[in-house]
Amino acid sequence: MKELSAEEGMVAEAYERRYSNWSRLVQVAKLYLFAPSAGLFTCPLAMTDGAARVIESLGMPGPLQKAFRHLTSRNPSTFWTSGQWMTERKGGSDVAAGTETMAQRQKDGTYILHGYKWFTSATDSDMSLTLARVVDSQGRLTMGTKGLSLFYLEVRDAEGKLNGIEVQKLKEKLGTRQVPTAELLLDGTKALQISPEGRGVASISSMLTITRIHNTISAAAGMRRVINLARDYAARRVVFGKLIKDHPLHIQTMARMEVEAHGAFLLLMEMARLLGLEETNMASKQEQLLLRLLTPVAKLYTGKQALSVISEGLECFGGQGYMEDTGLPAMLRDAQVLTIWEGTTNILSLDVLRSVIKSQGEVLNAFFSAIQEKLKAPSSLSSLSQAAQHTLGALQKLKEFTHQAGKSGGDYMELAARDFAYSLAKIYIGTLLLDHAAWEEASSTDIYCAQRWNNQDLCPVYTAMTSGCYNSESVSLDRQLVFENSLYLKGKL
Image (cartoon, rainbow, N blue to C red; front, side):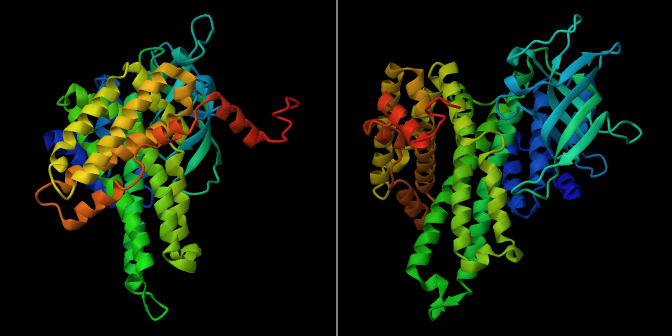
């Protein structure tokens, strides 16, 4: 897979810029086709792509030019993959509190790392980016985010020996078993500091954008694969005297799966379009803001979609969907990582809030403007106008919610964060489906798909708000519901 990925330019395609701002979309389309058959090699490709983007965004200082050439090579003998070693024992998404690895500066300007990386994906990669805290001349460390710097390291030295790295154990995981994940002890690992001191987290932001979009690729591709398999099975399997495809209830179920897959695919392509514009300095201010807002939204929502659709897909095969020798259960196990890696649903929902707060609401203004512009064409078509008005109504409800949340304070908005992110996803996907269906070459099924998507509650955050789900009483009742009769609630533990 590594050789094939190099030859096909699965990473290089995005950086050669042969197609200008469309280069990223071409790469994403290829990965979408490749992912279901790649044996999860798309996992190291995601981190390789992310590392290349970080290096490019840092201006490719001298020592990193070689690494960038390797990461973006089409020659299998020189192509490198990269890991990203961020998670430590205290780990998870709170890297500011969880990172304990220390970096000691050497006379030659390099650093020696000492620490324990608890979860390292693609352990067999050629290089990695990692976070560590620099020890100052008095032996002191700066804690929190401001103490973290970004480092580049090669996994092996010139003699092929591990670079001060000891593999402590391989992880036993629910899924993604084809990709080695390990606990690593860094004991004298030679590394280069590539970010300004204390700017490690800021420097990896571009990597997170890339890896979250790769997560979206895997989600959309996984849905498409299971639907294709189920469609083929439905045309072959006979039950109760006729093919499954001739049972209306079964086809209705598959049609619902198709609507989800269509929506996820269009959202993925939109993210690729926005990223391509941003990488080539062609994005408008609105497009830059949309990319920031929608990257975590796309990742979190399509991850949930994939789990649901793939689970439903297994049901389409009956008992065979539960049998390991069919390969189908592995699809569901592998899909679970999509809701966890690079941020769980709640963590990413909070990231969406951060984008709103940090931009002082500009990302939402960009979102509202984009929706209104994209809905102009479908609103003028008789076949789509009703669905378009439904979407515009949902957009108005979202505006009403944000107005109420602005008056209610941060705790209120945090409580609504997941429903808020889902509402953004549902409205934007619905808009993309309508925009596509308004295209002069759209098919009747494109129109029907857009109508089906928009025949749902597109703004669940407004529905929950009007039901009183975010008030202080609900917070108290939620806690009681979860911890009823528990000693934790009574303060005895």
